[in-house]
Length: 305
Image 1: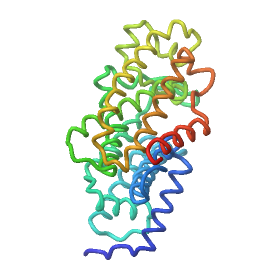
Image 2 (image 1 turned 135 degrees about the vertical axis):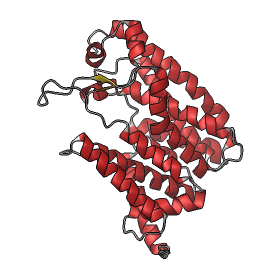
Image 3 (image 1 turned 30 degrees about the vertical axis):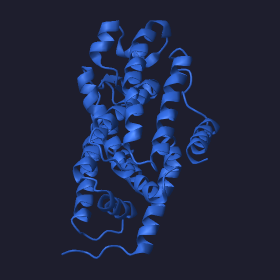
Image 4 (image 1 turned 90 degrees about the horizontal axis):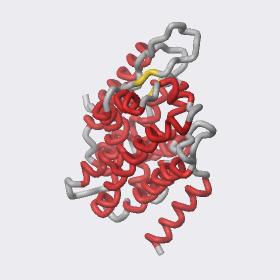
């Protein structure tokens, strides 16, 4: 049975919840959202809130990996039922279904987003379950890592450009590569934090090539020894960032400032890592709020004055 669509007040409330989630959690992405027209800003907020909930399930305390995986896919099945017309009082589901309908976002892309989140659900081998997790190299080769980055980041880009608007199919592989660039930047920045959770995303074949053990990478005590490996990761990210300049003119003009802000913020993160000689261990590399506001304001003035 087809359920009546939510009324405008319900939708406004649902999108308001999603905007709140994005403001609270999207530390870098929300600065790009702010330059979008309201309709597109709402849509991206709905997508972000959906992604955020998937991440929260995967990180939920008090559940083992198998239970988290079951919960994640049960939740995704619930969204499928909403898409098929089932009633729901979940504001994220209501807003996302409306976004899907407005912007023609394939359900398969949202499924891939959730599948990518689930790729982190694995148990590191532990001799003592009570001890801190030992770092596990998650991927053997860059090709395997690329597949992970595609699901957790490139698919986000493919969803975003449907909201941004584009007509040239050449935008799709470019959005894929920009997503890879963002995720490689995150991986480089978060080496210490990921290792503390038992995960290493630098491919095993590259660790072996540079003669670096997972424990050495996790500890970061000999930065001189690690630097050539980390430089290689940064250079690879730079090569993928080159796609952004080709992607910008292919999306609708009212969305170009938002994408430009996102690319600038993530590029600056990578630049900051390089300026610190790849010390991602002594403190988390980040841009200040004022730096990000400055990027936003400069882009606003360049585009709208």
